[in-house]
Image (cartoon, rainbow, N blue to C red; front, side):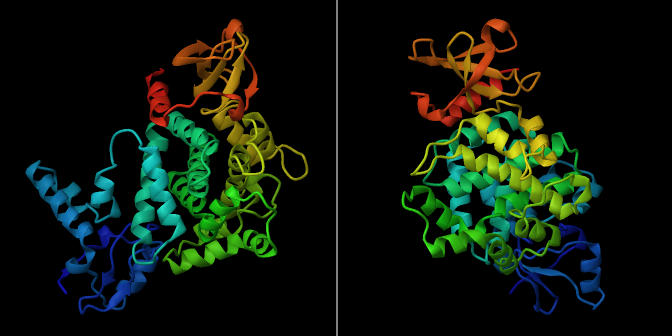
Length: 404
């Protein structure tokens, strides 16, 4: 054991610990992945005369990356204030260093999310989950249109890794909506994203199985689906999550709670937005027994609540994404079929590119069209099953990011 004193400023409140936290005598204080919610919780720990330490032998890459980052800052003549505030974080791990810049590798993210959510392990769930979530946050912040495009497009095609793809879509859609439309504070948006990403952690493998299953659900499967919210909350606690708002949002994300958002608690507001995005994403995805819904039908399903009234959370989602969100296929007045690449100046005038000509033949190229012009206006949605052309998601993302 090689214990090194740890500054209290190295603790990120509300985030899973990326290392095991120990006292000066080596006593275990908190497992890796445990969440210290706030300064008060930390002060309670320190009031017992405990000195925070990290064992460099067991912290591995987190501590080595921290030291390497500190050395880089010293070489760059960084001011002492920035050096003092530097935090040991899972963001410094080798895995994250490989993905902390540049465009998203969405197929790789699907694999990472699937592995994490299907077989979560308490030993490393906190750091791996945080790394995945922070990468999604980066893409939502830097390229929200390309992010929605990739995840909606993949959701309408992917069945092998449906559950993780769906979780990423719901997480990103919720964070974009909360940030751009509801104007929630950043910390609240991040908690929302974590809750959405982990909402189905207790049934990820079952979800992937059910997507492929043509037969009706068995009684055991129905029971597992019906109680998955509470089981997900319980599992997250076992994995080290202690944030009460995060946990309540997961537990309540299937509760029927129509009505104004401002009359709900913080966790209930998150749960409601997650529920609306969950409905939207689920209807986009194919099943063995049915085709995916057209995107406009999926939007309508989340826009109206259980009483067939406009749902505030659903309305916020539609306002954020538009009637025709990135990743949707549409028919133009020219009789061409196009894919939406970016949101536009209004909900009904997104930026699109033609993929099939008026004869129904693939164009081979992504040909931009201005849907604000009457001659190229959108006349309606086109189901994914009716589009006889496929693209690498990286190509669509690149085309989206070229549009200004």
